[in-house]
Length: 204
Image (tube, rainbow, N blue to C red; front, side):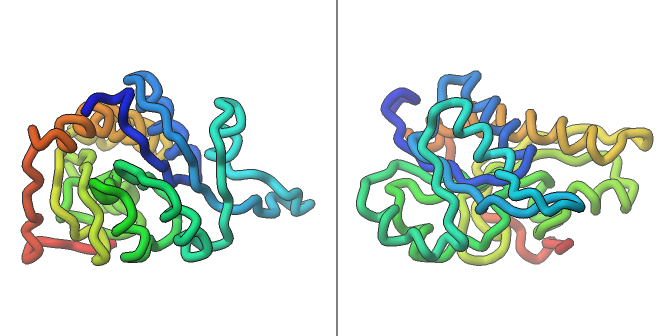
């Protein structure tokens, strides 16, 4: 399979997710459908505001759904055949019913060197703990939190002077690039995912 034939749904919500989308687009990957969170009130005046991924989808004329919860769209998603789903900072737990829909499963972009820092705040944890390195992990999702087999990883050195926003941006670009480079080789069985060392897992 090549990238032009790949049909995929992208799940994401904040600015981090739009950066991953930008990297995918650079490499010629365009989602057929985007799933993101509903518009939410923002600021003191509670102005109803779309999430960054919704804005990105509209600017690229890509169909976008905003369910209150992903369980509400399971049947609708299952009406079409998909090769893969991609999740990058979506903000909701993905059920087994959704994991079972695409032919090649669901792939996640995670901002740590799994099995280290499973959970919602790996970037903050790396900074608070004074880690000397961090990185990106592309994994095939399972029902357990960040427990799926690893498809690919990159390692990046950490400076004590780096700020949280800077690291978010670096890892968003790095994770998106790694995903773009790994996706087709993985689907074509040129990459063999390996199980995480669950005994060495830490959570944040």
